[in-house]
Length: 355
Image 1 (tube, rainbow, N blue to C red):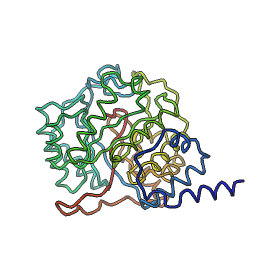
Image 2 (tube, rainbow, N blue to C red):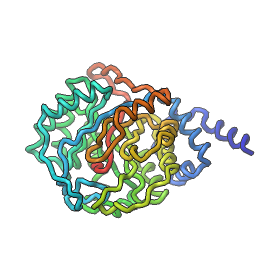
Image 3 (cartoon, one colour):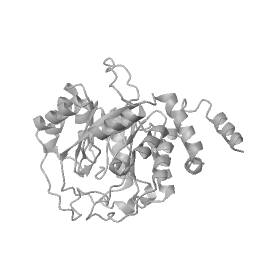
C-alpha cells in the first residue's frame, strides 16, 4: 500500500514545478494540505529542487526605520497605538543611520535590506527621506525592500523611480478571518496596494502570519489568494505569530509545528518559483523544525537579533544551523542589463508588525 502511494505521488510530480498556475481551487489546495505528511513534503521538495538549489538560503536583514504609534489596530502588532504594550513611538530614522546599518548587514552576509515603518500610509513629507534610503542602499549593491503600509499612486511612482526592488504588503490571513484580526482597513485595501505596486513594475513581497487562532482552511485560503494573483509574489514571507503582551492575540494557543511546516510546503507547491521565507517566530522553532521547513521549500530567512520589535535568532545560531545542515548563504545574482526583462528572484518581510 505504501509503495503504491509513493508510486502515485511520484507519477503526479513528474514535471511538477515547471508550469506556474494561477487557477488553484480551494479543494485542490486543501487536499494538498491534508495529504499524508511525508507525501506532502516529498512533493514540495521535488518542486523546490526543480526551481532552486536546495542547499542555498538567502539571508536578509530587516530594520525598523520608524517604530510604534501606528494608527492601524492589527491584533498581532506591538506597534499599534490601539494596544497597551508600553512601546515608545519613534520618529523616522535619519538616512545616514539607516545606511550605516545596511553596511553592517552587508558585511555580515545579507544580500537584501528590508526597511519597515509603522504607518497606515506614508506622509508626503517623509517620502524624500524614504527615497534617499532606497537610493543609498541600492548604491551599496544590495536588494531593497520597503514596507510602509498602503500606498497612493504618487507614492508608488516615487519608490519605483528610486529603484526599489520589492514592496512588502502582506495579506496576513484569509479574507474570512481577516476582520477578526484587523478592523481599520479591509482585505481589499491590501489587494489594491499590491495591484498598484505590480502595475508600477516593482516586485511584490506578500505573505502572512499563521498561528493567530485561524483554522486550517484559513491558511489554505490565504495561499489560494496569493497563488491566484495575476503574478505570484516573488517573495512569500510566512510568519509564525509571536504573542505580544498587551495585544488582543497575546493568549492565542500556539500553532502545531507540523501545521506550520504544512503551510510552508503548500506555499512552495502552489508558488514554485517564489522565494518562501521563514520570517518571525524562528526563536520558538527548534533546529529540527527549521530543517523540515528548508526541506519543504523555505529558502530565505531574516538574520540578526531583532525583527522590528521581535526577537530573532542571532548570527551565531544561524551560522551553526547552516553548518550542521550543509546550507550555504545565497549570493546575489549580477544585476541584469538596463532594459532587460527581470527574472523572478528573492523575497521580503516579517511579522509582529506586518504592514
